[in-house]
Length: 59
Picture 1 (tube, rainbow, N blue to C red):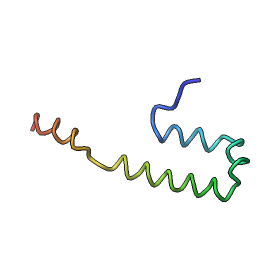
Picture 2: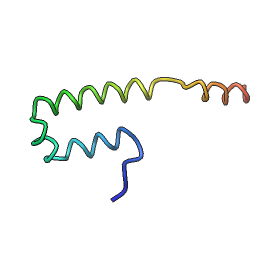
Picture 3: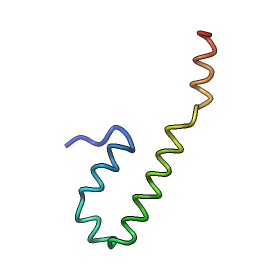
Picture 4: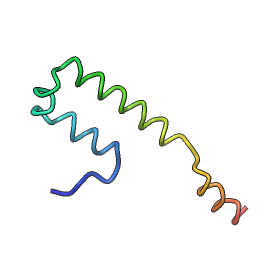
């Protein structure tokens, strides 16, 4: 089995992991998923300084 290549893929796999739900409990698991989805949304909507520097070279 390969490791997920993105946080989004990791979240999809985590949502299917009943052993984690059982370990954390449904309430904590759901809040963890919600917090991690918010983190992923913040990450994917940010432009990193490296990306800006790379784009400036071309425009």
